[in-house]
Image (tube, rainbow, N blue to C red; front, side, top):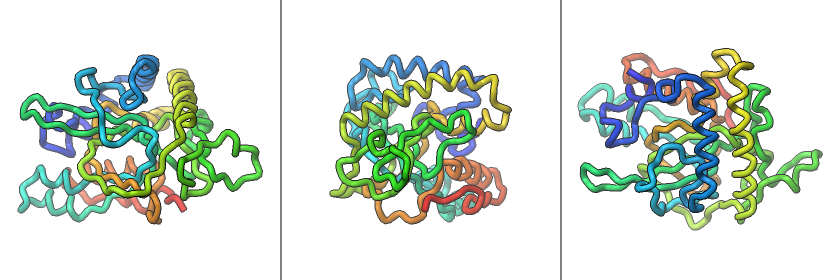
Length: 287
């Protein structure tokens, strides 16, 4: 059973839980080739649905509530996942007891999927990670754009991304090639929404397109462990159930992107009958 199939008993067609990127793309190079094609294709799509969508067919591309260019905090929805198990089951209780990390990111694509079976719709977004640190390994260390305000002696202010309301985090970086596809299960609205200025969203897309194009050349230079980590941080063609907050302030426990992988592994371990992994200490928090 593939990595994410073990997290849900529901059928992939009805939930968006489909085989992992390791199954969908046999090699790191194959994943990158598919990504480069999708970015070129997205340049002619409308602003609400264009950025970095790699699998939604045209009939699923309709207006969504969350606009690209919006910064959000998100976490895996264990409440949604637990509902797919009997309430008196051990899996249900262990999933409910697990507390996933919260992550900061930029919504770069938003669209609605239509379920042909029951006529229902569900919103999905693609979110690219924001982090305090640069991406690793060194081959992708420049795959980011700084976000203003920047507390640095380097002349990055003119290059930094700017938001309509001053970004509440100092010295943070907008990653351009790593993110996650989310199925929106719960939102926490706010009158205060942090959005990129229009020209800065375009600058992000331009930089991300160039950085994605470079990924395919890394296949021959990285070891297997690095390839696996990078592949798991790339936006995959399956959606994870998530809760989203629009007010990105007052989240002191924001985690670094690598912790997201550990959240997935911990939930796998719970469902497989093992003890959850320690996702609090193995990767740094964002201060």
